[in-house]
Length: 312
Image (tube, rainbow, N blue to C red):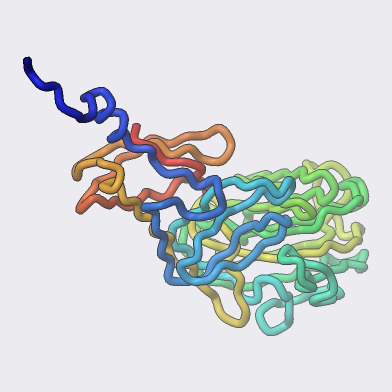
């Protein structure tokens, strides 16, 4: 009689060797995943505040409105060309026909870091501006606190000079751009507005009260009012990335490098397709090259955090 011996059936062996992938929805890196980044970086914490994360520290981003975990945020390198991104002062900014109170209100980080800009002049436009050296395309973004002031009373404007304007309704988050691409992100107590310039802009301008009425209407110096702002950024690209806070000098954020150990899950070296489940309902299938059991993960588009990664 032939002895069958003791072992594992081929079907079971196949089941055991099936790679599980990597789950980033537990607020920590799963086994076999490592992350490096040569600078600090920011992301929303569970309290809806924009928190700073140290060098090589993973950023598990949360929804700024609900506080729920969205996944692991990894981004390409970027530079904020705006100096003094949170505190609008006369050193970095040119101020005209405005009263400014600095560090007077809770900013996006939960500290007293926001600036209040008030235009009370009915004869001239109040504006703060800053000259920059950028590349193209470029995108400007800033946080404006939500308020109860309708656009029929006053609307604000963000401009990437010379003519990339974004008219802003601080109550509803509505916006209108006559000649550029723009958008808004709901950030809890704040709106994050952005506008894109296809040609390298030389200046950023912010008007707290540039008109009153429908956003499609023209401007008028008779409008007055105040806004609270924080986290102003101009960077290369077509969409804003996480805030890079600056002081007297521009600053850069290093790229996140996420490395996965597929070899520990029985996956051989070579070219492979992976599926990245992103925040929301989106997913991305992309190619990786596994060398020595490990492979780096490509940066997802539009700053979407990664929830899970599996072999496609």
